[in-house]
Length: 497
Image (cartoon, rainbow, N blue to C red; front, top):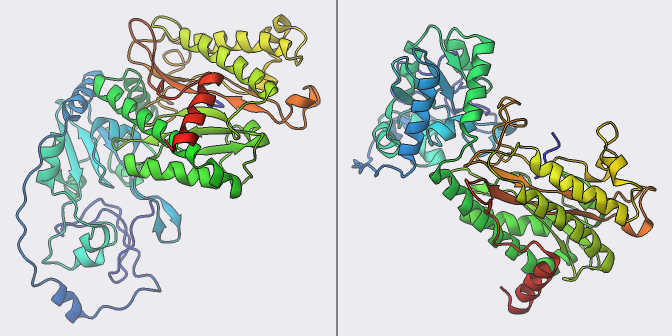
């Protein structure tokens, strides 16, 4: 994806004042506010509520085995404690986000929390204590002896399904897990990751600059991926490759409908093999390919045109792929389309080759831009590559628009709060995973471009692992060169995959 640079669950319980605390003295109390029943909710007689709390079988719990990622996350928490010794560090996961009225999006934990803990429970909070110990605070399972399991829309099992007990969470994640309401007993100075749960922020004495330093460090902690993370990213890339294959097989249906058919086909793969898409899928046919983040996906898909597909599967542990291919809808590039495509491919080759430890982060960008600028002269778009590349001019950017690389991980644009001197101006290190995605975009109304180029947009993007040696393309399962793309499409369309 080109890098141009919850509503707390409503309860059916009678209206109660909003609480500015994360728990209560009631076992299993939810941390969310309870604004009261909505107008469409039926009344519930006391007799019904009493009836709902009786007659349930006793359930025996079998604790799960520890998750394979738990030791890696423990090491990250240890690194965090080492960076801020003797301080309390608080990382909330956040709650549900409102889509509209009382309807929420599916919950996704905050990135910092996911990286350090791995839990997908809303409203949970990680606390690293001054002695370095880590505690997870989570809403307990609601006992069926109280009606909350039936009335609470956020935590009630009859609304959202079974939830893990504190003991099960502790066993799975390898972290001491306690009831969420116990967090209310904490106070005093702490560094808090802001922006996820304002009620957590209000519990502690915080300093904005100190909190920003915590968030900055957690971004930088994600720069170097460990072997487990690399495996997760590889799985996401492999699933994404299968999603692209699905799309090629569905191109005939897309031609009779719209770009949205492509979006839907890929989304099916993302939900079956992962958590979801890692970002809004870009399915840009024809001149829409010249719009960097085209996500309306409501345009026609026509023979003779190109379709730019920028899509990624987000895996079960939230690591996402970010891959772009530009395909000829008919299965064959026209001569002019191939000329542009070959130029972008050559630029990407140069960019990938520059992804070596010790090179600065911008090295792939510079390498790709050199190729594109000289190629634009050959296409008859620019008069002089040297003039276009001059620092005080950069005229080539009218047609390239965006940077070539960004970090990739749990976020599609990962590590966004890292310091510039560490990320953008820093050296590449083994374990970095970044995209390499040069593109050329000739706008339909751009009179500086030969008429037969107008409306052509091409981007090729792969996910590259920096090692101590040669770079590794995690998304190499998908062909990149024009001949390979045509042969791949021909095989899929002929054999049905």
